Image 1 (cartoon, rainbow, N blue to C red):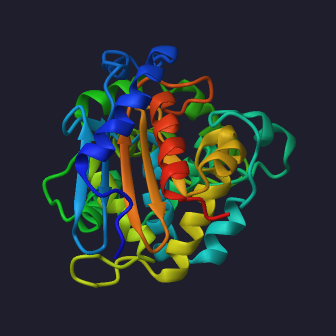
Image 2: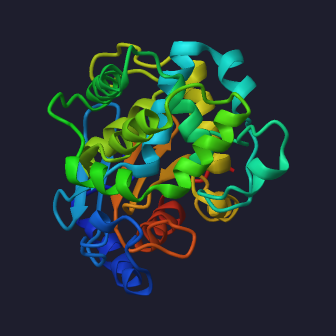
Length: 311
């Protein structure tokens, strides 16, 4: 397999070119635990199906997944419930609205979220994951992530999870909206606790790139060849990453970068280049849409240099 870059030093050069753009952004401060992260740090990893990997930038920075977890729970919910069940309750269309917007729930009847990558859709998806209670469901999510990364030691950051749970009042409003119309049928506080833990799952960029590589490899574990995700579900997830993965900047990202990717407000980005590799990025300073500003620039540079665009 031809690698995207020939050496770690080549990747370091691209990181150095992208890193100054972090000064133009700001870290997410509406979640108190995320406001303390150094926004000027930038790290990237590439992971290939043959096990080769490169990491460059500020070491193995640890990030919480935040909205990147939406891709993982979507795959798990589809495996648990099937496409018909999931998409009767959550739509498949981009919104053009911010990720935490309540507007479309107010104007669509019933209050069906438009896609699984916005907060309303992600909350509905998380409610579909099978389990007797929140503890069993977070264990299942973590076990799935352990399989995708090959790292059984990963867990969630309790401080970040509590910080999100205590301050996520808009997400509670989204849940009650959907509970009124039967999209969600469980205790809102239990769902909020589970969702906060899901978003607070933490890992380094290499583990993030490994997850991206599984999707790039059509759902197969690159190391063993064992199928972790049915190929059609991996395809669905990658499609949502293209159409909705970068919030309401997904169209511009498709033009400038052109790969399936999902961002989170921690500053993480998971990329999956079909048939080639997974990418993990962490740069906490965000642009006005909630995406890593230096991370986006880095991906734009990589896409131009290595002709990554699918289009």
